[in-house]
Structures are given as C-alpha cells and as structure tokens.
Image (cartoon, rainbow, N blue to C red; front, side, top):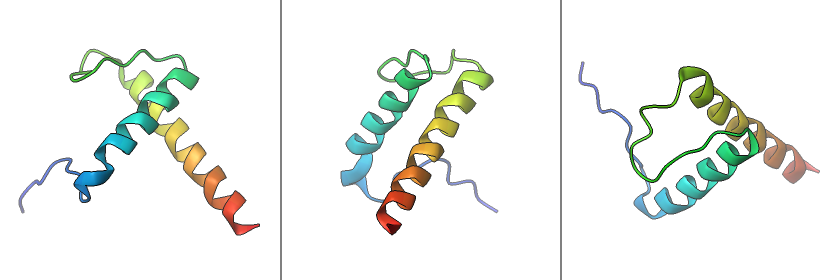
Amino acid sequence: MSNKGNRVLVPEAKAGLDRFKTEAAKEVGVNLKDGYNGDITSREAGSVGGQMVKKMIESYESNLK
C-alpha cells in the first residue's frame, strides 16, 4: 500500500485553503508561519484543524436554511 501523503486534489484551491487555515489559526491563537510549521504542538495543530471543521460545519448548516 503506498502512502500518497497530503496533496491538494485541486491545485487552484491551495491558496484558498491556506488562507482558511491561517484564519482558523488566528481565531484559536496559534501563530502559523509561511512554510514549515513543524514546531507547533499537536494540541495547537488539533485546535487549528478543529476550528476549520467547526467553520465548515457552520457554513454547511447555514447553506441548508
């Protein structure tokens, strides 16, 4: 089984995803740098990911109305 890693399926969406991630990080108080962010803790990374999911769910729910 091969590991393909993280890859953007739609290259045109990469800039938007990066802006979304940066916005979510600011909301939870995590300082992301351009490029490598391997020095952030697992807790910080999880907070950013969780905030992104929360915002995606809120967006989906608002579009249902």
